[in-house]
Image (tube, rainbow, N blue to C red; front, side, top):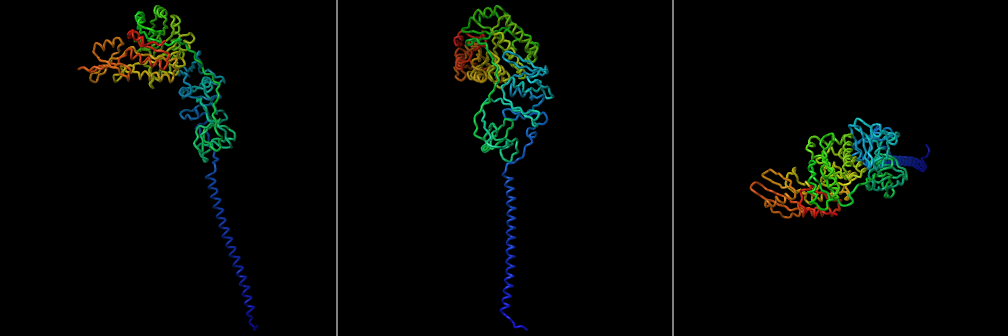
Length: 586
């Protein structure tokens, strides 16, 4: 056997060992690399997933809102916006290249001067010197029907509305528009307008995840409706209202849209001095004989209103108690005669005359106007004084159309038109004092009947607070140059016995005698601006808020303070001569 060589074995073992170590090292490196690669892959996946999540969470949505769904229209339906607010209670229609809107909505929100007679299918619009009638055959300037009759009622074309109304319209209801809409602006004030600094979008809500209504390009203009901080509510020139990021908007500037609409001008007949008017109650031609007695008691009177024309039936017929002798005397005395036209003095009118029935019929209404003008020209009236009381709300629109059309005829003939009104409250808004302000020459406040036979408690006929309220509320709708405030030449004596309350109207002279005869002590009440008296007896309580020179003087002070057009008085024959010393305005 060969001799054992320890050195050689040792070298062989070392080489094997090194070889094995090298293998093990390579394996460890491969494992570390594999582990590192795995970690990197996991990290990459995490970053990829997390980045996608973050991108999804924080990147703007590109979802486009379905506009038909958004505007809630389809086919030829049109979504209506008024001053950038959606009118969810109505839907217009697009037809014949025109947009049509419900007449009731137009009257309430845009222009109430469009008078629609459903029974006659007749639309009437009254201008200062012209009455325009439009029927089912009428066409607007573009050739489209003025209005359409639909199952839901009459629809008025926007072309006709624009012709007679100072409005701005953004019409996005053309045939190419899938979601038809129209924007109508009645507001005349300036808007905050700005440009878009870069491409962006109008969204349904303030937030980048909200769906997009429309894309905006750099330089496009929008109006800012509301600044919400990081976002603003805007409206675009193409009829979109939504939200844009403030960072995309330039600094806004005040902008006012120009209008080439010519507002109608209403010329007026006036007296040329302050009006001092009094009514003369005449219940028949025989009543005219009291003119001399009543007029001789006055001072400074320049207008007298005899109650000559009294409606009596639903054909529009009326009694007329005019006499040429009366007119000659009044004119010789330097008085203007404004004939009162009423719906309540004739006993037959209580059951025979209905305002809606007469004035809601075009033929009857115009026959009445023709008859009134004929009487005025025949006898030589200087004016008319309309006094329609207890007017039902549903009759209001027809009464208003009556005085509109009457005003055109009066203006042509130089006849003054005055209209009587209650002290304004919400329940008599249908008298439409704002329309009277345009069509009438004078608007009269009947500044009395604060407490009357219908009252549940005793009180003043015309406290100074009530009078001032009437003036102030009327001046919100009518210029002072047209306002006449009427004062009462009467008061009421109130009697309360147990639960029973009653009152009796008395003229100033009779009331003064009653107070003296009954021994009622009067004391001045600063709050009402009247002398107040109260007497208790075994049978009950008597109260009175007396009208006299001092109380009328307080009312006259208010008339002068507000610089009104004049004063009126109901009625001649009730007053002592001294009262005219405080009724002076000229």
